[in-house]
Image (tube, rainbow, N blue to C red; front, top):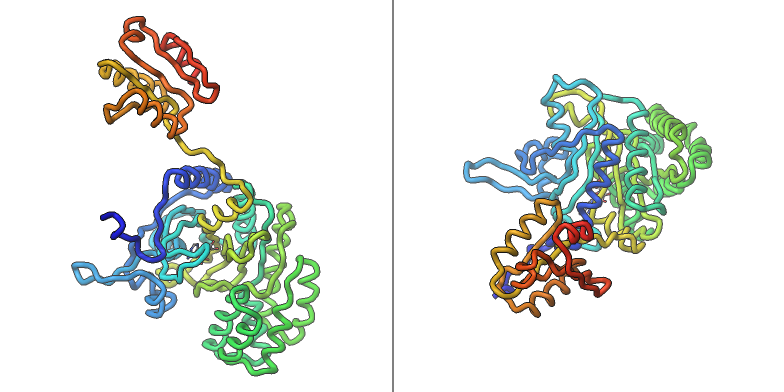
Length: 432
Ligand code: AMP
């Protein structure tokens, strides 16, 4: 009973139509990654639990898949690609710096499944290790813009900030304990997911006083194109302190490089962007679809200079990751999913004991680089033609004893509803 066997919560199967689209998406992504000189790798899907816990501590176990293997080792499925890439690079002191690495693969998170949120999903991920310059951050933002545009998305916005801006601001209004700052940043990261009331309640719960809450809300209103946002941030500067200044510089300098690249058209400075994952510590950004904001971020990234040190090598790093499923949802919303499902180009149908010739013909077609298939069930010609029709095959070759004897094939052009008796060479010219 097939119906008894269900997929675990948050998991999904990928059928041919979607798989074809995914392969198309992967190819486009890889093209753009190569243009930016990123080299493709794949970190291991299973890590020692200590690698996954290294930054966040054991609390990460709540959010990931982890288990004990038969040898008693504690292991976990990767929850992103960044951690594995950082571990890989930290273990290779021979690499010339900076290193630009990318991966396109899946990961697992014990998230609550909803629209655009799964427990196993795919990301493209691009990281630059070994440069602390804003040029590297700008490369990552420009790459993210080019990737989305190469997939046919235009209406999106890139919201940039620095974690240090938010941290410096919180310090300046008297929130100094690192634990409280951390829990407030975690609430700020949910700015787009909560109603305004819930958001403010959570900020109070995280440790803000009513007066501090008002200050924070006015700081978080800074969400505007670069020039306007940077001039509004001047208001907060007088009491900001060194961390705030550093954050402001990071944002300004990255925007300057982006401007030289001609990539600021879709960029906004947005102080609510702080990123959820624990390892970010400087410039940060997220990309949102303008047509479907409820989808959550399409891309998220930023600087994490402190992460590689945990894995044994002190290396500045910056990077970004984009969700493949969310990008597909955004494309679907626009009717931009290419309908390029791979079907057999030629189906060879046959009657009357010519199976051996059919098998030979299919092999010849395949050798000529043509996708070809034939009936594997020994059905009537009518059933074979119905099957070919249901597969939307553009060409059907019908072979019977008469065609074999004449050294010809009967070629049906399915969309034109035409039929021709041709030599194989003539047929190949038409198909190819
Ligand atoms: P993150 O690694 O959390 O910064 O996520 C990077 C990108 O991956 C996000 O911007 C989303 O597009 C995508 N993403 C994150 N979590 C999920 C999820 N649970 N399901 C599907 N896509 C996700």
